[in-house]
Image (cartoon, rainbow, N blue to C red; front, side):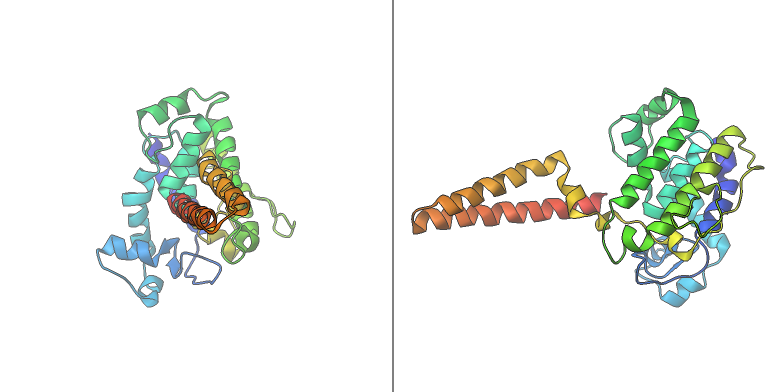
Length: 274
C-alpha cells in the first residue's frame, strides 16, 4: 500500500523542514519541523500558541500532525508510491488543497482539492505512467512557486531554497546536486522501500511556506475569470473620459469604482483560495 511510504516521506520532509525558525521572509511565522503556530494551535484545540510553545514541539508531535492531517488530505493512502510523497511535500509547504489542485490540474480533472475516484482514475491513466506524472507535478509546483512574486515572502527571497528542495539543483551552483523531492519521488516510485532515497541538505529558506497570497498580480490577471471585470473597468474608464457632462462623468466614475472594488475582491479571493 502507498501508506507504507509514509515513514520515508516523513524522514525526507523533516530533512527539508528542519528545526525552529521565525524569519521575516517566511509567512508561516514561528515554525518547527514545518509545523506553524497556527497549525499547532489547531492541532491542540486552542486559540493560539506562543513562539516558545512552537519551539518546544517534539518531533513525535509534529509527526502525529502530519499523519492525522496532511498525509490523508494529500491523498497519501490513495496515490501510488512516489507520487504520494511528492504531493505530500508540496502540501506541507503550500497546503494540502493547493497541492491536490495542482495534481488535478496536471491530470485534467476538476480542481476541488480532494483526492477522489475521478482523480485516482486520471492518475492511473496518465500518459507515461507515474514517473512522468511525478515529473509533471514537480514542474507544476515550480511554476506555482515562480508565480509568488512578493518581494518579501515569495520567490525573490525564497526561490533558491525552494528550487533546491524540489529539484535538487542549486541555481547558483554552490550546493552539491542531490535528488530533491523530484529525484526521491522517482526513487520511491521504483522502490517503495525507500532504500535508495537520500536525506536532503537544503538552505533554511527551503522550509519557508509558499503561500498563494504571494501570487503576483500579473499571474492573477491571467485567469479567464479576471477578463470580465477588466473589460468592465476599461469600458467604464472609456465612458468616463468620453463623458460630456457632470451626470455622465459621475455615472462613469461610479461604474469605475464599482468594477474596481469587484476586481479587488476577485484578486483577494483568488490569492486566498490558492
